[in-house]
Length: 328
Image 1 (cartoon, helix red, strand yellow):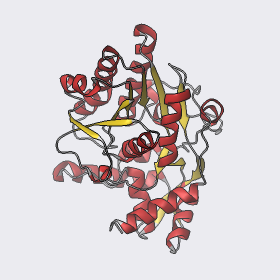
Image 2 (spheres, rainbow, N blue to C red):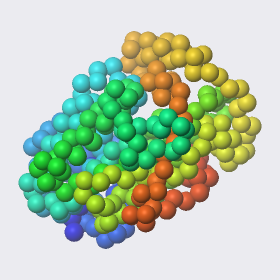
Image 3 (spheres, rainbow, N blue to C red):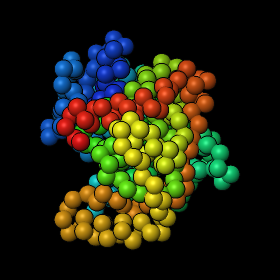
Image 4 (cartoon, one colour):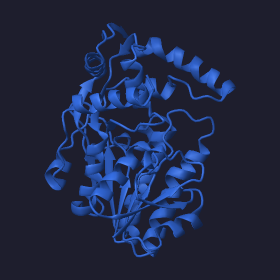
């Protein structure tokens, strides 16, 4: 079986490619010519050059494939010009799904995000049924993923495309080469460069468990359904304390309100617009931190059989990889 994995040079995509290879698939990956290929070193994959912004390249990529994992996305919490993000995340996903269907692909697993889900008002973990709307989405990344997921569901309803949607929570673990915003948090905390924290919370899951969830969605997921691929809900204070224990340092003890951090984020973004470099703290990130982003992966456990390993293992693997790779 030939399977296409988009985004395979990235954090989640490379984990998916490794898991699919281990399951015995022939793996083809869609990469831009300039993509960082460190995460693919040593993997027996077929490389096809293309871009989500180039529909013809997507047709070439899916030709001869039986299944597709569409993991690629423009994932940034700050973008000076968001138009390209929407073009890649929304229209690019539609173009790929249609190209795959035209090529006879039997199953498409689309990687969305828990960012598209609503947050419950009573503080209980959200799930696939928690309502949300575009107005709830903070920032261009969340809005683009919300719109893209809506398009995937429309393609299932209106055009009969064989799409299963997965919604990873916050992956952590090895091979976060960029690193992602969460990876930067783990790195900074492990290096002792995070003296304070805000009162927020996340659902953390090992990136390899997210990859396992993708494979299970391919094999057992129901077309048109979405599945949260999550692990453990933790406050940021608990996460930083766990990382500090792993790294052998003292955890931060200063708690800041988002009202204090927000002006810093505005200043950081102003500097970023002048320098062209992504800011370390973003306005959208601070706004999101006002609520605890807790989720339940109960549906994935029941229908897919997904189980997540202890969160300490995920954090320990992330810290060890950053250290071994010279980031610290």
